[in-house]
Each structure stands twice: as C-alpha cells, then as structure tokens.
Length: 139
Image (cartoon, rainbow, N blue to C red; front, side, top):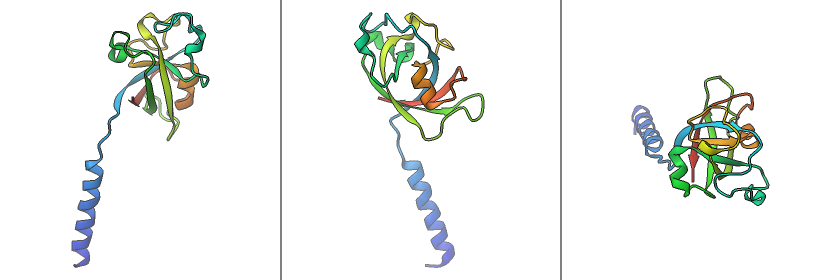
C-alpha cells in the first residue's frame, strides 16, 4: 500500500470511528438555586431526601414528568455558557432530583431551564458566579 493510500484509509477510518460514536445523553440548560430547599415538590419537609454530597436539583418542565422525575439520578456536565471559561473542564457530577423547579421555595437564577442545580452542584461543574449554563445530562 502506498503512503498516500494508507493516509486516506487511516483518515477515513478515524472519521468513521468519530461519526459512529453514539451518546445517550441529552442537552439542556441549567440555572442554580440557593437555600432554603424545604419543603420540596418531591418529599415535602423530609430532610433525609438530600444526598450527603448536596448534589441535587429541581426538575424543569421538560423532565418533571408529572412528578415521576422525583428520585431520578442524572450524570450532568457543563458544556458551554455565554461567558467563556465558565465550565469546569472534564467535570461531571451525579445529581438527584428532589424538587420541581416551578414550585421550588427558592427562585432559580434563571427561569425555564431543564434543571435547577443546588448551589453546591452548580459550583462543582461551573463558575458559581454564572447564572445559566448549557449542560449534557444522562439518566
């Protein structure tokens, strides 16, 4: 095989591998919210609903599913934001849905997002001074 043919074959193979990668993740937006977190739309005043890591979220309308989202766990990462350098590179977190964003006691930093992360969760994947980020999330 000539070097030119080998180069084309290698390039085609690499392109095939990249394009054939399938992800089960969804893309959405996230804002953040601060305490108080109780009562929540999922578990009322039950303080044990929160994971010890404090990585939790309120579900937006897109994933709320009439309350079926309560207790779901999602792997979440920041993929972009309006302000450059907002996302913490290569950082993913696992969060638990404990509330419904539309009825949360504390208002979100930005309304109408896919999910509203707790202050701790938001600050784990993005600069905490941001109010809105684009996320990739997977159940």
